Amino acid sequence: MSKGDLSIGNVAEATGLSVHALRFFEREGLFLRPIPRSSGGQRIYQTADVDWLVLCNRFRESGMSIATMRRFAELVRSGPGNEPERLALLQEHERVVRARIAELNANLAVIQDKVAIYEKHVNEGTAAGLWSPTASS
Image (cartoon, rainbow, N blue to C red; front, side):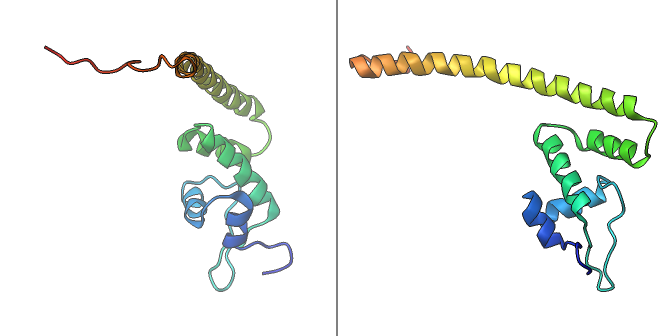
């Protein structure tokens, strides 16, 4: 490998992705370029690959499907001229993530209400019997 080249271990460390995940991303066509190999068959990555993988990992962690990630990568690989399609894809994912955040916030509000009730009763010594199962007849 030459200066600036990165091994799969270096990339795993830099991205927080496992070697297995990196191989999976490659099999799924999520890279922007074919990853070259050394004469010994080892993958040779560049810094730009790491930057792309960090973005892909954000997409994945935010719930973007592999199919959508693949489509986005295909659009980027195909070069200029499809930016409106890329934008539409990103806007749809943003909408989905915002909806998920709103749902999580609603769930959090319910949990916070329950915490407040339990804190009050625990502090006042009146918590015994809160949501205790009752014997059925």
